[in-house]
Image: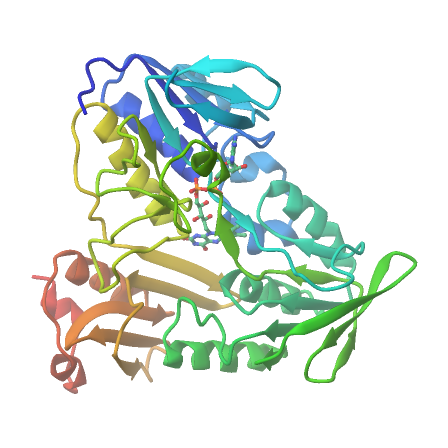
Length: 411
Ligand SMILES: Cc1cc2nc3c(=O)[nH]c(=O)nc-3n(C[C@H](O)[C@H](O)[C@H](O)COP(=O)(O)OP(=O)(O)OC[C@H]3O[C@@H](n4cnc5c(N)ncnc54)[C@H](O)[C@@H]3O)c2cc1C
C-alpha cells in the first residue's frame, strides 16, 4: 500500500489505539485530513486508572485524558466526540454516523475496542448491578462504592481484583465469585494465581472459586442479595460484573471484513481489505512472540504499538508489528507486571526474593523462556522486557542456578 494517494484518514474509536494512530500519522509527516470518530462524549482517556485510583477519588475526567484538547487542535486532528459510526461502505469509501451524516476516507482505521460481557442471570438488570469499562461506568460506580458496606464482584480477573483491593482499602466487605478454579486464570500461570489468591484472602476478601451466580435478588427494584451455585446467599446492595469482554467487531463484520473473535489483521495491522486497518483490543493477529497461532490482547502496550504500525503502513512505511507484549495491574500494594506472552507455557519456575519481597515466575515453552510474571519486582520486569525483546535464549537450568540474575542475559 502506498501512502502517496492517501489524503483522508478516518479513525473509528477515540481510545488509546485511535489516538495513537492519529498522532503517529502526524509524527510521520502525514499532511492530509485526520478525523477521529470517538463514540464517547470524552476526549481519549486512560482506562487503567478507572479500576484503581479514579473510583476512590473525586477527580474530574480531565485527570485521565491522554492529551488536552489543544494537542488535537495543534496537530490538525478533527476529534469528533460522541460521534458513533453506524456503517462502512467499502466500495464508496465512506462511513455513516448514527446521526445519518456521512464522511469520505481513503484509509480507515478501526480502533473500536471491546464490549463487556453481560451476566445472563435473573436480576442482572436491577439497580445496583454495574459494570466497568468507561468513564461513565466509573462515575456511576464511584458514589456507589463509597456508600457500600458490601460488594459482590462477579469475575476474578484482573479488573475485578483491582476493584476488590480498592474496596477492601475503603473497609468494605468484599466477595469475589470466580467460575474458574483459580484467579485471573486467563492471563496467569498457576503459581501466579495462587499468589493472587493468598494476597486477596490476606486483605480479607472472601474468594469463591469454581462458583457461579445463579440469580440476583432484588427489593423495590434494587439489588438485595446474590445467589451462588455453592448454596450461599450473599446480602449486598452492590454487584460489579467483570466477566470478560468481547471484541467490538460489529461494524467490521457488517462491512464484510474477516472477523473471528476480533478483526483479523496481518503483521502490518491491515485487515482483509487493504484500505482498512485495525488496531488495539478489537484485533486478532499472529503474535511475533510466544507460542500461540493467534491472539487478541487487551493491553495499553498492544493498543499503542499496533496503532503505530497501522499509521506507518498508511504513510507508506510498513513495519512488522513485533513489539514485545507487556502488561501491568495494580492491586492494592501488589504490583503485577508481565513481560512476554506466557500463554501456552508448559513449565514454570517460581523465584521468591526473601530479602526484597516479591516473586518472579518464569514461564517456559519447550525449554525456552517466553514470559516472566513479576510481583513487586520492577527490576526483574525491566530485565525481562530487554531479554525477551532481544530474543535471548534462557532455559530452565539457567533459572534454577542459585546465583541466577536475569539481567546477566541483557548484554
Ligand atoms: C477498567 C480497566 C482497567 C484496565 N487496566 C489496564 C492495566 O492496568 N494495564 C493495561 O495494560 N491495560 C488495562 N486495561 C486495558 C486497556 O485500557 C485497553 O487495552 C486499551 O484501552 C485498549 O485501547 P483501544 O483503543 O483498543 O480500545 P478502547 O480504549 O476500548 O477504545 C475504543 C473506543 O472505541 C469506541 N467505539 C467503538 N465503536 C465505535 C463506533 N462505531 N463509533 C465510534 N466510536 C466507537 C468506544 O466507545 C471506545 O471509546 C484496562 C481496561 C479497563 C476497562
